[in-house]
Length: 394
Image 1: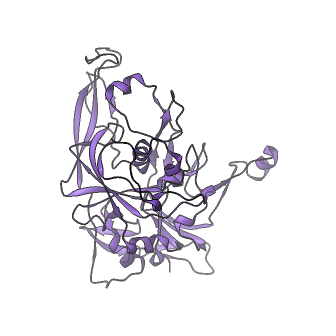
Image 2: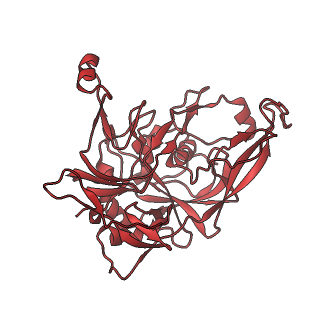
Image 3: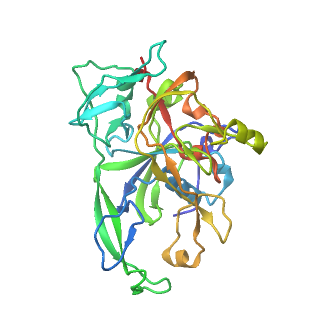
């Protein structure tokens, strides 16, 4: 990977504290397999089971690629803004796919029902209607060009809105564990000499897509912790999508990326203000938590939280960037390990929020204090990127 070369002036962040809006699509096409996880270690006597899968790579992985490309230059990285992961068909990456909101009940790859939040003025609790008892598809994605059809119900009831399943599959690979100082199998019986990884095979006609406010040179790069080669293209983000991202989220909205809320100790379902000061007073007012929620949450549709973790810089050079790029295997063995962040739980993409007071700001304008910070602000990686979903509330 070459050093940073000519970059357009508009990709250079201003001195303003607010980050520039999204302007580019980062299109990634793997040149072979990608790994979805580091793998769970198995003993030679017990090879049953399948490694936990984590795919596509988070925006933090892409942030590491930017940090490596720009050599940690704060001129370009200070106000870097990314979001993802998404995917698209290679022939039309502008119409990328985002996770389907959880209030959309999908069957046979079409949206059968759109749940709506109802709460009468005299009631203390609301409810989601219609009440439907059936089995529905999970883990589907919807094209960004279809978003307004579900957000504003721009579709006849007789015309079903299509969704898609992810275009990748997992292929488990059993690997020998190598010694740290030589290319020989480690035969330590206590540790075991084998481990299982999930290789991910992406459909040849598909690609991964991320949003960015900073331009990246088209080239081949090593991407992710395993350093597999990918072809990266940087495209202009369509005006239609830019306009959608600039809309205030209003009273009801859906997440299209996972959201990490809370403090270093606790993970929450919504953003919080971290309270500091008189410990005794705090314990009297809020014995269970020192955190005050930002939103007045009224309704919510979500699923189980997902783990979120990343690696930050290196011990030996005290880097503050979140680079995940590894020059080569020899250097990898010589360098000190990267700093592993605190393990957190993220609200999954697709979660639908209903708040009591309308938020008259787009996600891009949300305050940085709403997001946790450990090194960079989590907003840098598109934490909880939200789009308006007014059809979700009556």
